[in-house]
Image 1 (tube, rainbow, N blue to C red):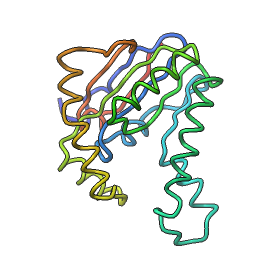
Image 2: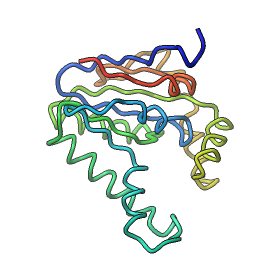
Image 3: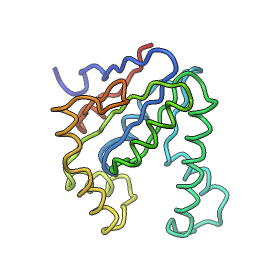
Image 4: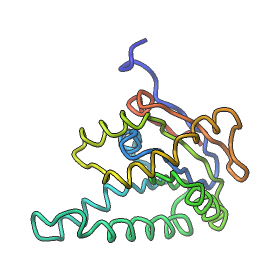
Length: 186
């Protein structure tokens, strides 16, 4: 079976859920989320969409570093609002390479009466950096190095230990899985 004919990854998400799609910047999170078919009962929150909305409202050529803070703030605000009052399934895109960020998302899901599911898109740092260059948006060197250092053991831990406490499920996908796509099964 070729990659093109491989079926999408299926994730079982019954009831009210919050799905965190995490991994290194450039690992394939946005690629994976772009494959989700639109559904009334699902909202997908990708920071790239927030960035695109801001770009249309800013003067042409405004450098991203000048409004990066606004993208991060607005994206996180939309995550909180959706987790508390959104539709049945909320899918969130965040690198979440720190355990603290993943824990905050898990607590937010619980506060919103949702089961928390973690999808970790794993890529080696060199592959993730290449993915950033392909998309034309590269995370600053020091910031990326921090993400890479923190993310180093996450995939291995998830594979060996299963879902961390408080998570209904945890899946580790590689870049090829991200290209195959994702489907949510209720």
